[in-house]
Amino acid sequence: MSAIRRAVVAFVAIFVVVAMTAPGAFAARVKTSVAGAAPGAAAYVIWGGLAAYVSKTSKTVEMSNLTTRGAVEDIRLVENGKAEFALGVATLVDLAIKGKKMFKKPYTNQCGVGPGTVSLFHIGVKKSSGIKTVQDLDGKRVSFARKGSSTHFMTRTIMKLAGIKVREENLNWNVAADAVKDNRLDAFTIPNPVPSPAFVKFSTAQPITLLAVDGKVLKTMLTMNKAYFPISIPANSYDGQDKEVPTIGYTAWTIAGCNVPADVVYEVTRLNYSKKGRSYLLKVHKGWSTGFAISPALDQMGAINMKIHPGAARYWKEQGHKIPANIQ
Image (cartoon, rainbow, N blue to C red; front, side, top):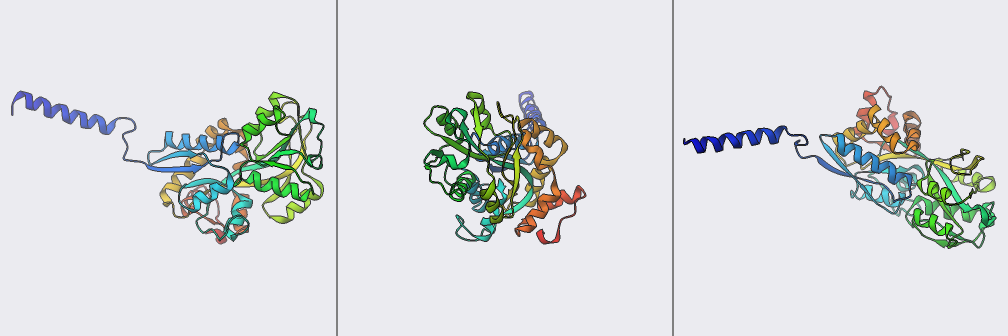
């Protein structure tokens, strides 16, 4: 073998070794996506953070954050296999499994992974509008957000129970915040962990009023779905908001398609709920802190006949948690 050929062979051998040991030179990673709502929603921020963390730290899984119209579409994307993960709003997952309301048939590809967040229903108006109650919105222009979102479903329900008729608009949350500021809209709504990115933006632009969801409206909604509960937006959550505001809330879970491979779900669950993962995600959005209590989430899954994904069950068992028999 000539000196030149020996040199070429040696170079190729060195190149192969370097390529195989270089950072990021792992075997091809499984590509996944999480359905994460749209800008202005806390879910968009939180899931963007999760996708970035998984892609940054996992040797086996990549994750991208899908922009969607909201929680109803998120559940549909998981059901149809177009997204592997999503934030599953408990009230809507309940309806999906039963095949009720906007879900025309029972959904069978919805598996629980673990706790997500607690969302509190926000209704915001400019303080200068003089609007002080939900009933004062009668005849006003209100953004229900996009059809296919939990915001739209809940806003429509609340307005109906309040016995009022409003002029419905269907705007993205950030667009709606600007529209109220510019007097092109009277109010907008969003169920979100506190602080809601859209309401932070809204409250820094002018003095605002948060409207309470209470009385008969609240009592009736609590009877409509086991996943609803009374809660208050804490005082000083937003600029100029010096009193707590009673409202309605719900839990959201991390969900996955039941057909997603167990090792993939295990890896995402491990990263999501690990000490390092929690620390990272809390820097992304402090609303994630409500998603750390596993036992209530597992009990709620059982209440609506939702099964836990085997990959997630493996992780929680390793952490010493008992998995209820009715969700396995």
